Length: 277
Ligand SMILES: [Zn+2]
Image: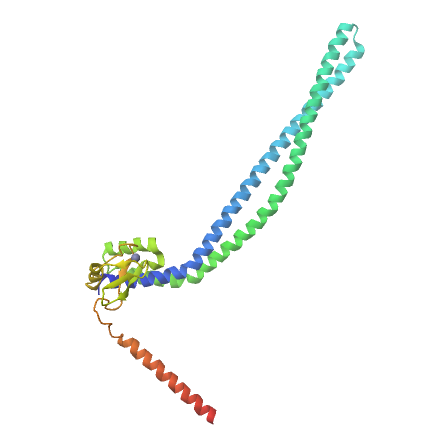
């Protein structure tokens, strides 16, 4: 068996593996996307919570400062009531006014922070709800992914075993070429040679539709591992594409076709007999 024919067997198994895994990959991509979005929501939620905590600390600090200013102002008022001289009174009054304006400033700042804290709190609540929704979606997506993985596990192991068994017989550089082509073309990693015109030596790559030179097609018919010059996929032929006459149809195909035709004829006869009766 030529290396190309051996590679084709591996490629057929590869195609089955890919088909089998495609639903799993869709489920994995969906899960990854949902996890990413949950990450964004969780990050935003944590940031807002930290801001809220900071605001609460600041507000508490300002409240305690206001309380100590109140205490100091009360004491100053007592001292003003008891003071003897104008000079003393003026000094207390100046301090009292300074404290009053400091307290006003503090209260204004506190009010602003309280408003911000209210807004942040509302945002935290909204994000908590969407975080819970996202978590439910992620959990369902994870379950779906696991279910798909479980469903195909045995068949996957079987196909991987088949592939490993087939690969044992194939030279490493040929396998590397197939791996490259699979990475590049996926399900079209190997492509047939299409006969456009036998008499005029015209062939094309069925993957990229580009014309194939006669030397390339000759190389394939001599069982050499050959790649398309344009798209680099590995070329193979399932029939003699070089000879000028169209090859006879595969005997097996002809036999199967005959069998099917015979069955159909029989079926029709039986049906007619039943209808007659
Ligand atoms: Zn091509």
